Image (spheres, rainbow, N blue to C red):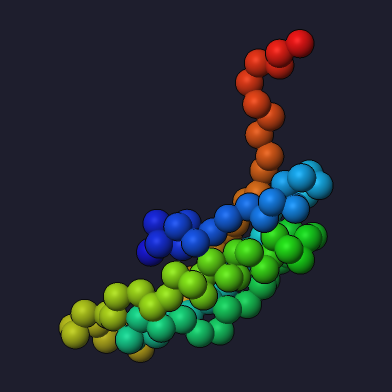
Length: 94
């Protein structure tokens, strides 16, 4: 699941150029059939563009594999943290 979300998650170019960084927390529900519902931003990064990119990654990654037949739960509540940090290139040339 994590790999699938990371595949769709990106650092918006405009945000990176502007030096926008931060962490955000999301809650979402995975239903028995693998669909995602109730994606909620619990704590913003402070930048709507970064928050939206994380929410979009979750929505694009869905659906996930359905639950096994012997699972007794109807859905799973997931809490996720997304961190955006700009790392300066090594060296410095000059």
